[in-house]
Image (cartoon, helix red, strand yellow):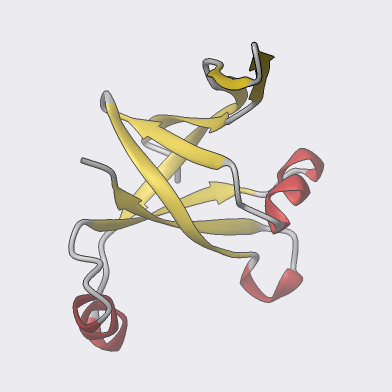
Length: 107
């Protein structure tokens, strides 16, 4: 379990300057070990039908801080200098062992 290092980043509001929004760099939420899993079977075909072609699942160990990801809006994953948008979080039957983070590569 956990053979690659990923960074979960949180996007922050940069505020406004002269009434215009300002971009702020994302803040590191958590850096953790993960196991990348490719899609298989029905899940693969469903992602193709939804036009989510570059998808990957990261399986990470559960911790209390990860519960902030219930609302995954505003978070993304950095893996091998590539940005992945989180589109689903699976807390795996709420057994508090592992979390599966489903992501799509951002171009």
